[in-house]
Image (tube, rainbow, N blue to C red; front, side, top):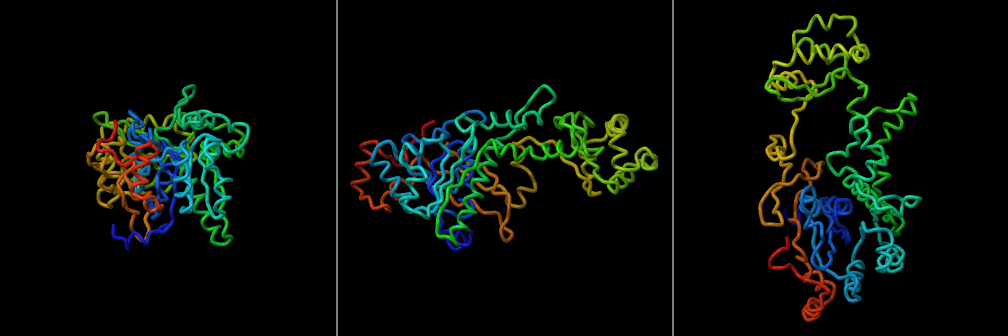
Length: 404
């Protein structure tokens, strides 16, 4: 992307220094970086341990650390902390997601940094907002279990976490949103502020619709697999050759279209199925008949009819199949990325467009300490200073071979 194009991004010229790992904090920085901010990731000697995760964590680092620079500093050594403070002095925003008290012990908490720079915006990503739970160690799965989401996702008696890091990612989004709000406020007051985002409160926000459902109806919400749907036809169907497809008919007009498209005039005329609420009450006998009616039709045929008629439908897609999704390929929603092992792949861009374009991938996920030398020189360190810091293990530049 050209420098002129980069300057048109909303947060071009904003510098963010982040002390983050895993998903929540890095998501905040990634979103600000995608929108043009210069985001500098401060890593410990040896690199962020997120780089080395296996299994379901293997995608964390390349997904949430694009468009960032990397500097390595040992914050437990005075010279490393001094370099971090010099870097923070050049920043608009500091972002962190360590346990409560860690940044304060390092002398990098909000109060200390605000004393140096009253305009600093400080974003903390925590498990819980201040209160009785704040001492607890939180994970996405922990708050899903205690916040009602696992109960709503699983079948009765079988709580099940959602299939992605929903609270970590969305919590990072709220951290970024808070930073944006603080930037707007600073334009008026010339003062920074502390922003806090949390996993637990985020999870409660996600299930708030079910809390309000109880408040309105007086009845506890049932888990999604056994809920009474608001619509009669709103389910996954197993059809020809065992394929599966999600089909929905969510209004009386759509019911009319559905019955016409599938030659179900007798169903449309049945007074027991006249309105959506009538059809919801008839689900016990309606759905088995419909499943039988569609069982010998292929998923592709059903999709073609539903698309032609403007009815809601969805194939049951696995994540790896999205690399070949025709819509994403046509819109440029997948950007080329270089993985830590040097392999090429693609990564989804930010799910919004600005003037018709999704914010681009400008920088590949950084190697450990890739920008250390350049950033230290910018902060006033001489080449001899940088070499001395490397010799003492205070910092490191990009290694010739990334650890695995």
